[in-house]
Length: 113
Length: 111
Image 1: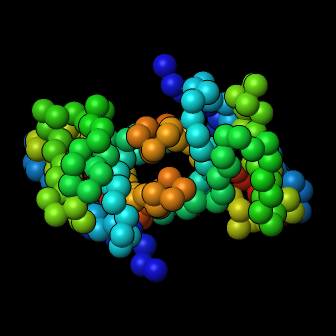
Image 2: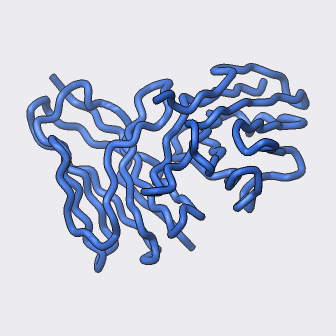
């Protein structure tokens, strides 16, 4: 079974630029999560989708972050404009509804200069 | 509010047992998880325990849950150098609607 795919793996941008990350979950997983993991911290949930609907986006900084999952499969997370404090690893996960187990992708490491 | 706390570092000798501890605040969680993260990698699920269980064993891993004290622990028997990583405790509420991760415990295994 293929795991959660993410791209790119690394991205370096300057502040005020825009960036987008892509995630393809495990086939058949209806729930998809985006997390932000700042160095030295645990992952923080940004947004959770159930199919193509948003379940929880309470911690998403909506003035600059947006996410979509139009067809209920893959998803994109965008930051516009980026700030220095957005430097982090952005992790995507998908959920096995039987056990609520989340499976994580390798992440995208974003550096904002 | 909800919170998950872990000690930041643990150092053990190869062959010894490691015990990583975690405390959580919300008693309504249904699942508690342990994830492992190696440098530059995503989180790898190690094991999980239902909130109505006290213990779960899976090969070298033993999870103990004390619901009264809201304390979760992960014991790794015969710790190897390949076990060196960051270990995250996480609690997930009914239906996966909210997930809280601890800050992670960095395990160092000395040869």
